[in-house]
Structure formats: C-alpha cells, structure tokens
Length: 346
Image (cartoon, rainbow, N blue to C red; front, side, top):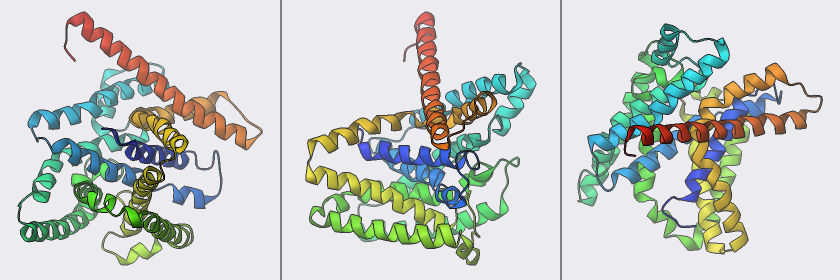
C-alpha cells in the first residue's frame, strides 16, 4: 500500500467527488437537507489534498516549468470540457459565446474551480518557501506561525472585499479567499505528517478521537446549526469560500482518511489492503468526473425517469462517474494519437 502514489489521497478524492455529486443532486436523488449540508465539505477537501500533492511535487525542486505544467494539466481538460458541454447544451457552436464562457468559467457551474486551482497554484511556491524558510527549528516555527496569521487576515480581506468578474465561489475571490488557508494547512500537514505516522501505538486511539469529534461537529454544527455559529467569525457563514466550521469539518474528514490508512497498514490484513488500494484507483479520475458530471446529470434528467429512488441513485451515480471516465479515455486517446501524428513528444 505504501507506493509512490499514496492510496489515502485517492480515497479522499473519491469522498470529495461523491460530496460534489451529492450536492449537485439535491432535490433529485434526495430531499433531506441534512444530506445537502453534509456534502459541502467537497471542494475544501480537494484543496487540502491539493496542498499535500503540491508540497510533495515541490520537494525535489520548484521551477516555472513545473508550475506551468500544473496549470496546463487542468487548463486543457477544462478547455475541452467547456467545448463539449457547450455543444451538448446549445446543440451548435458559436466561438464568441464559447470563448466568453471560457473566460468567465461559466460553461457549467462547477468550472469556477479551475480558476480557483490556478490562483492557488500560482501562490503555492511562496507558501512552500515560507514553510521551508529556515533550517533552524525555532526560526521556522516563528515564520510558520506568522505566515498562518497573515493568511487568516489576507483570507478575510480577499473573501469579503474582492470580486473577479462575478465568478462563483472561491474562483471569484483573489487567491481563492479562505481556500488559501486550506492549501497552506495541506502543505503543512504533508511536511510534518511523519510525526503522526511515527505514533503507531496510539493511531487507533487518535482515529477514534478524531472520528468522534467529526461526528459531533457534523451533527451539531452542520446538520442542526447549519453554519450559523460562523456568523460570529470574520469570514461569516460562508460555504464557498468556506468559513471556520466548514474548514474544520473538511479537515477532520481529511485526517480521518489518512489515519484510517495508517490503521489498515498496521493491522496488515491483505484483503482489506487490496480492496483499499483497488478502490483508490477511482480517485485518479476525479478531475474528469468533476468536469462532466453535471452534463450527464442533465442527460439523465432529459431522457430517463424512475419510479424507484434507489434505482435512480444507482443509475445517476453510475452514468455520471463512468460516462466521465469514458470521456477521459477518449480525450486522452485522441490527444495521444494527435501527438503521434504531429511528432510531438509527451
């Protein structure tokens, strides 16, 4: 299980994308608003994970080429997805309309995430540098604390007082608003997570404690209070960008998944480890599921009807996930073929 690609990250991505789909099938597959509020962790969880993977990739070196590759890795699937979604919704193609939607990230509702991701990638080398400012432990601790305090203040300003072309959520806030806090925490976690992996004797206890805290938070502040407590904080009761309750809620899910993998490794049951690893493969496709799931939702709503709600849930989830993965396979196959034809190296 301890491969170069850590399975827990992909498992957490699966949990995040399921949250996205649950959120976007509100009043279609369910009508209990506790379920809707419970799913709002999704994008914040993705940003915590982005912090982890970004820090890992910068450990060898940080170069303009690497930053550009990260930006391009989400930009070209976004451009293709905007084109395909445009054709599906309008049944025609108008370049001016298409380009306007590309620039405003409005071809489909979730596409604000692409601009959010680009914001955070651009600023991530600075956060990495601050997290590795000094080899002196005390000096590094001071810089880290000052950085965290500075980011909280910066996030309060950018969340409340910035706007980029009226783009929804964190994509329309300078540097992603409070999402920059989640990015920093994810990077900080990746740097110091070995301290947790070294406490193998109490990992199960730690998992139990964090799990209980998560359940208490979920029940009292998500389902019952529904983020109203956050009105007392500087960020307000924000959902996107997230305020305090949602940041903590997503972080606890993040930690639970990480600790769960540590427990599975310690127990060393081959069957469970194999299932965990195999299921995690789905997490490698979450970008395309994110880009296309609403298009497939529209397709199902336009062409199918269901008497049984559980049948509807199975069909919706299956088509939204597998259809998106099929498009990913087709897109990558076509691009690979085109590169071969034009002699472009990978």
